[in-house]
Image (cartoon, rainbow, N blue to C red):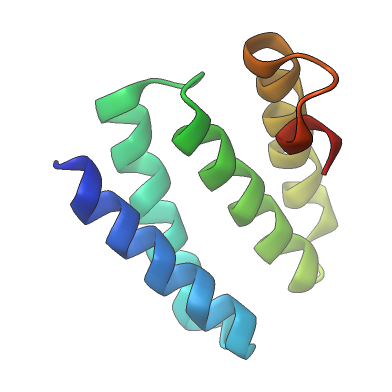
Length: 91
């Protein structure tokens, strides 16, 4: 899977999420995350952003039990790879 293709899938999922179409956005965000993990690994910034965005989507859907571990994993990854003061870690 090419990184640009994964980014396009992720961006479409994010757009649908922003439009409020969470059911259509979720499979796209999951597909992008799977591809990022396979291609870039779990600690790459794009993978961490994808984990975060899927967690946010699940939070918006009210699935807090599934959202929390994803958001914690993203925060942990940002701290380890970018540090505590990086803007991605702080947001």
